[in-house]
Length: 214
Image (tube, rainbow, N blue to C red; front, side, top):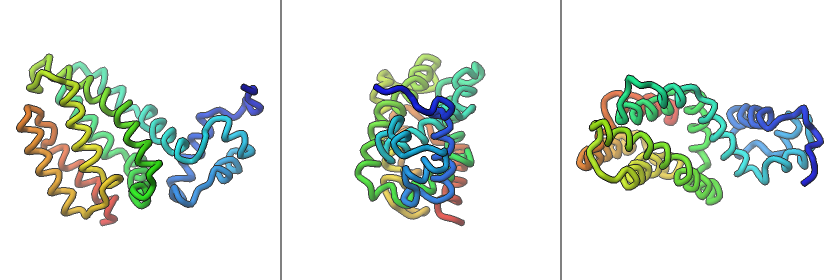
């Protein structure tokens, strides 16, 4: 592989620039050439790091999550049990301004793109489920979560929260989304995982105000 011709331009710089353009203009209205121009690079130099726009937006959303301080803060907070950590993670991700803006922007076109949906599903499998399972294992160990299979519980949580409740995958109204939240709360409680409490519901309602432009 050829060496990087632009050592002064890091992948972080590209991701920061791409994030800014996506949030300002929307995913559909930003090209790799736009990102290259904003970085002072050729499009070929961008392809040195990313194969296409789908890979770029996937990297940007991962970068945003990994750069968020709330994730590490929650992970090392010894005052929280496993269930509380899981709840806090959901609340933080749904009330972080940049995350909400990116979510709102993508919700306009996401479900129309099979490539984006495919990448999202892979990310759920490779990232969301392991993180969720980690906190569920803590919860089972400390007694805050009832169950004997953290793997299956993590998969169930992912299906409900990242698919059925996600406007990225299912285009819906605020009223229908909140009704789904109500049913999800009941179903998760029935298997010993009371994830959705009043705090989580308030966070979802805040996210809805941005998504549905109230």
